[in-house]
Length: 155
Image (cartoon, rainbow, N blue to C red; front, side):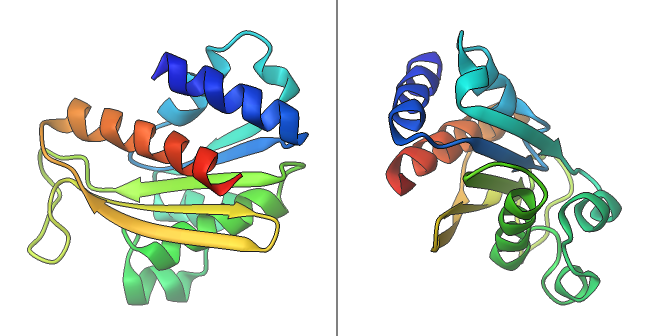
């Protein structure tokens, strides 16, 4: 994770991009991973930890209708989180993560390990859903790595 964060930092700096994160199930771990890199203030703008639906709405502008229709764990919500993070910051690239890390909280439709991501850079918006196995820490760790790799791929 540390090597990946350093590689991402170099690419963000070369691109003159500023990263902003919007996280739910990872609880700020993506932001922690990138800010553990010395000099990250050159390319990391801010991070939002929006665990509750109310926080997603208040801080990121996720619409109540989106949460009602699709739920917090959905690509639709992840896309609104990423867009909102950019709108409410001076960032130029955003990543969002929302999911079910477990061990409880899952359902048949949204099982433990289901995590939704979105990345926004310029006019590019990508979202994706992954299913990770393992315990809560493992699901969260894999989500952080996937989110960082996604930013690299987006740039």
